[in-house]
Length: 238
Image (cartoon, rainbow, N blue to C red):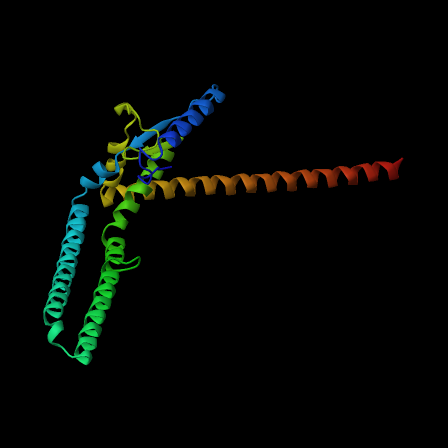
């Protein structure tokens, strides 16, 4: 499992100590079973993937553009408010209400634009999901595969603030995960083909074993029937 960077150190220091204590007690209770524990540096792995850097750069570029657009809108709003305050003494009540309504509508437009860009399901969310999330999922899935192949019981993320009070680089499997991710398409296809051959071999052996079992059962049944006929014939003779 991967523990992500969701909990800050100052606020959850006692939680950290508690989790560390629980893991220590658990380890003591399992003296007869050796647990394999490792950690990964997600940021390091992602930085080694060139296409991820390009995706992140595009995301940053779009985010900067949206922020500039909002800055311009806020600047225009401030100008509208200043001009209104300067001119207000010279305006009629109808014009004052009209200008106030105009400012209020523009404030709403800014809020709508801001939500469109940075809302819960705004453009930033969609673009990050499209550009960056696939790489994060790629690393996560690679960690799962490597952990299973190397028989790890737990994998932590180095950037996590829980438990990672000290790390020994001997337990860092970041390069193993990165190596798996960077495998060529040819290597992946060869591994998949080998896996399919192994599965086919096991399936073939299972079919052969099943057929052998059926033949043995049929042979046993014929022998039992033959023996019954012999016994019956002997009984009739006697």
